[in-house]
Length: 360
Ligand SMILES: Cc1cc2nc3c(=O)[nH]c(=O)nc-3n(C[C@H](O)[C@H](O)[C@H](O)COP(=O)(O)OP(=O)(O)OC[C@H]3O[C@@H](n4cnc5c(N)ncnc54)[C@H](O)[C@@H]3O)c2cc1C
Image 1: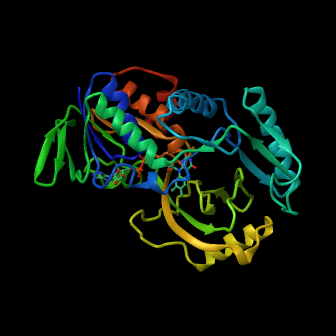
Image 2 (image 1 turned 60 degrees about the vertical axis):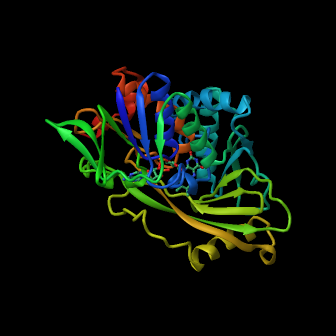
Image 3 (image 1 turned 90 degrees about the horizontal axis):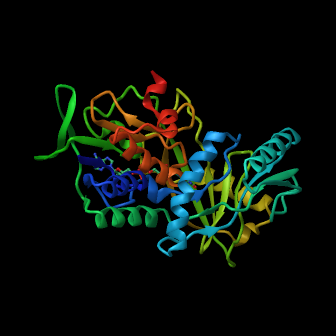
């Protein structure tokens, strides 16, 4: 089949690779550079924990890791294993984490509850749910790797090319409009991330998707910070990087009333920086040593059940691969594979659970 893909983030590029590998004729269209959208804004942590745990969430992660681990072992992709901590500030949260640790361990995930706050001096902490296998990638490197692999399999990757419309005939896809130009396509994959609804006339405005803002501030520190990716009860998280430490806001709850504008260019303001500094100081960082180094806001696309939407949309041969709910880097391999399954007409438990039809 001749497949056009809208969007060159981790999801569009993984889809391109999986489709091209199966012999489809693929054209990926990215209006900017590969990985320049939400992907570039990502912390790119491969998250083994699903909190609360679910068998399906774990199956998705295992399938994704099967592919990532091959890229890591072959030296094609760097993976920085740091572990992941959920730090509990209250006994009720800690009791829930104990249950989660048991469930995760029973399912074969290396998970345990430990006293205190991991490596931090957080006197509020009553314990931590820890999974040591989690770590992070360079998110743009993931998208670039998939784009390279797609090209090796014969795909065409066009950057600097905006899709302005999806062409249909008798309620079936026939091509893509690129401004004054057009290309023919037997199938289209909309992998436009938070811009899914603007990417063409059948960018289905009825889907239950919301965009949430994810501000991040990076503070330069005198010494390298080696800490696990850590989430706290106020929805802030901490991740180390080469210059210092990032603090971000983890916001993946679908709320009817909220929908952020992914084209907003605001950087996190003083209030967010203050919250970040208060957290780091409580964790034992010396506030005087923290210099604001970098900051940005990325936009997650969230669904009511926290699972992606992958499958055929309202128009025949028009496929959606959106709503990653803050886990697009973790899930990119299995989402790309599922897109290829959907186009090949194969059924899979992954496709069943991620189907857009679940919201009918
Ligand atoms: C702050 C933050 C932190 C995150 N941390 C993590 C994490 O630790 N772990 C994890 O697994 N996930 C994380 N995520 C989520 C993850 O980054 C996303 O789910 C993932 O990057 C989404 O990829 P995508 O390909 O769907 O979207 P995008 O990367 O946004 O790609 C969509 C692409 O479509 C292009 N496009 C849009 N419209 C058009 C058009 N009309 N024509 C052509 N091209 C178009 C855009 O330019 C863009 O490049 C985080 C997200 C944020 C915001």
